[in-house]
Amino acid sequence: MEKKIGLRLFFYYGGVLDGIMGFLMIYSLFAIPPAIIPFSEVTNEFRFTMGWAAVFMIAWTILLFWASLKPVERKGIIPLTLYVVVVGLAVISVSVGLITISLFQVFGIILPGSIIYFWAKDAN
Image (tube, rainbow, N blue to C red):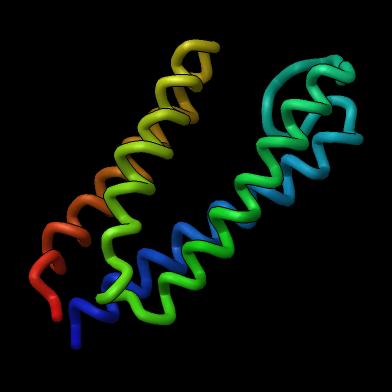
């Protein structure tokens, strides 16, 4: 039972973070300066990219909340989230010089998510 609660809490945690980021991405489509990335100009290219990113962030939010409904059965979403999505976002963040964001992704998402996943890996 404890492992199920841990998994569910991590899905909620990830869903809330993604939901906040999705909202900030949508807000950044229209705000100058944008709320997320420290650029002073909002071009059509920026809006296009941010709009696409927002769609995927909102979709991942829904996916994580859906996974929380059956956390043990859907725990395989955690490694996909951590090691494909979040590691990819961290690499992109470093490549554009946003080291602080990548550090949060490593220590605020990947590390706790890995601990919870490996702790609850054998949960049935």
